[in-house]
Length: 561
Picture 1 (cartoon, rainbow, N blue to C red):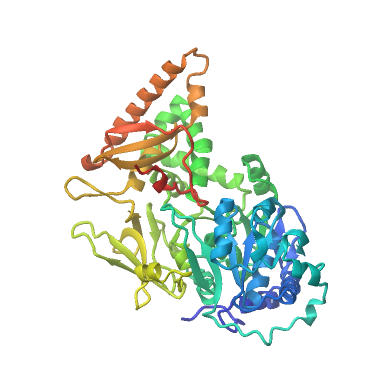
Picture 2: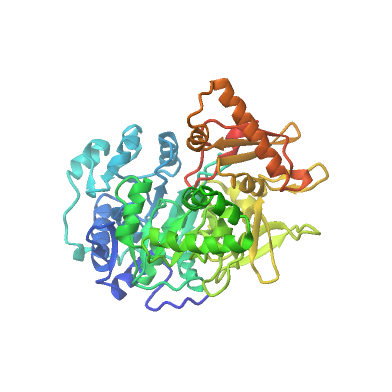
């Protein structure tokens, strides 16, 4: 496999960093929005310094070090400091429950921890006798009271040595060495430790050359957690490969904070999950069109809808700072009605498909090709996609993938590894889909979520939910099978419902009756748009927001009877 990048000695993350520090030494790399950036050369020296500290704390090759924090420049420094000396980084999503974090510490046999002040309490609550040391991520200094006593005595504070004294000549790292264990938070309730090698991660980052042209002048604004492999690979490794800069948001990313960050950073590249752009479309675009009877009716006519979408998309680019070149969407499928807006409006978006187990990217539409609505595009450079057990008529089947970026297995779980990885290196994704005549992949849904219709038809809940979510009063929905019947749970936008009944004095019983009438009208409207075997008998109100994974997918197993 040949990648068009010079000066890379091998496929290790160490070589990855060394190349960038050599080729782009004075280019800005990481910073908070509005702050002075750390250059590639400064970043490299910080990594050497922190790696040396880890060595003095007794960290050896293959030792596990946990990384628990919100996004910040020092997150990347800690990450590379760990893998630079052949140790294994265990990045944990900051939204994980403390009990899940504690389980990961035990399961991964973690030796040390990097933690931000915001999440320090999670580590304080752990019986930390098994942890040798805990390092505060903001200051990169050891937290004595959370570290093993022998380490407190031996290391009153992190060594302050000249990074030039660091040598890695005695630490050999192979491309296929384990670099990272990522614990997934799936929709099925089972958290698995995905083992990714140096080569898995670096080759996935380098394969993006077949999709987009990135330059040192590009600015990435990071809004997804770095501990998620999508942001970790595409939002950290990819910009590093091209000498681009990455900016992080220091405050909680509320709408007002995000708008200010867009204005200051003026990003050219943003990674997102579908829910973010769906909310923006419904609240900023669709609501404006629906506020006027004239535009609401015009928007129903395809010719005028396309014109209005172009105007709205152009304004949206300005909202993102005016320089946006790519808005990359991954982590889940993009609702059809949202993608129709992006597509017709010529919004600079790109949809990717992949999984944690594939480091993550498998497919995406290159910037030189036209996007197709509901497609994740063709397979990337070096990736093979195979559809197996195809349906005779639709051509849909199980999606298998093979590439240098496919994981080596699940940590301490050979049985589950055997279930998804065969002897020839093919990974069973668990997704269903088909490939059209031009090589574009279309995802139908998860095989575990598929519902079998009365006459053997395949019903994909995700597709029906996308139609339900088009309604302006719906925030989220979940389609289920109960006692052989199809139903949907609906989480409504109660702020808009309050606006709907503003000024009307209604009892709680009357409000409930109105909501039930509204749900029944929705059900009938949705049923008119789907096949007869996919029609639902009931819409139920879901008062509380659905519990979701960090990538905003509903944890379905929690709502199955």
